[in-house]
Image 1 (cartoon, helix red, strand yellow):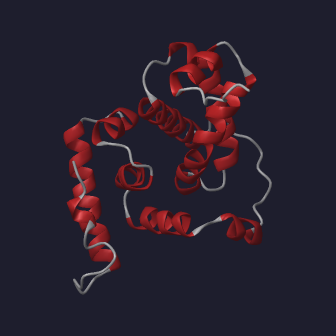
Image 2 (cartoon, rainbow, N blue to C red):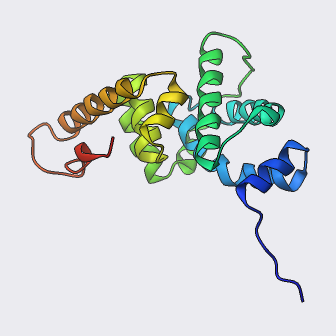
Length: 186
């Protein structure tokens, strides 16, 4: 009896570059939930459509990708952010059916509602940094590449965002759920 071995990330990407359906499906299953969380906050009414566009673009550009799993996640989020910007400028618009509030409410989990609250309190750049750093776990350099900013600018945005969140969510200065977030690693 042969033992089944999961392919490594590098093996999966190499197979996906050649158009292997199992490899593309594996990347999709691994990274789609995080992509939808991000898009659900920064473009909630277009998240599904934008995610589809992102995957089409990523599949076509895979031969140019190099890096590890974290680099892939950063590249995916960079691509997503560019698609959101394009959509907001009127490019690549699609006719969307009106969203049913009940369906949307059923799809949101606690982390998504927290992320939406974060996005409503912060500037778009600050929200992007916090979501990528805290929710998705990217490091400062990965966020900087994804947003096209210098690492120092990302650290400054993160610091200001966390201070603003602390003031907005805890105006009395009491210790609460954000009290430990100021100490995120740079």
